[in-house]
Length: 417
Image: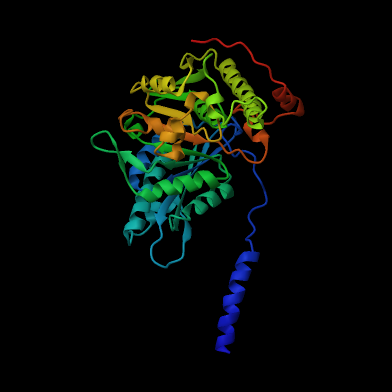
């Protein structure tokens, strides 16, 4: 009987694990990106914290995200803890409002979670139109991204913000923390049910609090084109509505000598790869121009917003233009650029040390770039529908006529500065 029980368990367990798929929530949500989020509705964010060192930078970023009475911030704070030993993973939901009455922490992990909760609870108390919901995920690092994705989908957030696995050192360079953090970020980018932002902290935590009557932080969006860059501009658009934020949008435009031919396997005009790249590029350029034009038309009278275009012909000129930015800005926002072929970034990915940041984000994260400018690299959630790529913070839905208009887009004149 014992032998039969062991054999049956050995056979049935893997069969059940293969056939049984736990049912996830079948109710889908549309606002998986900042670009599609309602401008006059609640914005839900999920911020991931490894250690208490991540807290100040995340809080300052949230302060700059412009919570208002029409568009409050609902923030889910997820403390990521590595599971050691043979214990089972768990997801703990905390009650921030009762954190002061919790008994003294019994171990280091609980003490760290309490400190993180107290910091965000203080942020909630001193901020308007912000609600904090703390959680703790205890799981192995090779699967903790699944917990992040599960929370993001269950809470229907539009953006997940997670720290970069390197932090600012005393000498101004970047020092590594836990190498496993980098793997967590890469797994999250591949599986996330919404947009993802990776924050490279170089001192945004040291900036003064944003006041309502003065500009205290300079933010710059680097725009090369594609869904990730449109998502980055959507976040910058939301930030610039805060009176304490001055926004610069720097768009890089291919010059007359820039070409995609160096990126293709052949110069044969009959090659289907050439036709695919040209069609995709034309479609994306249309969406980019339309979104940029919408942004400029609705912010034409705002003196705190500066829009410039930089014409470059190669990746070398792109890198040179980026390095001229140096320390003027406090925060740079850039799209990861995954799946986008551009002559302005040709060959840069071959030298990338951190693929999760993309070609441009990798340059901005280098130790020799700047010692004070923080970087936020954003990847937009694409989904199975091209409709995920359209929309703006000021629009809630799109009619069939609008979609047809996008497919029949024609170029417009643009002023080059």
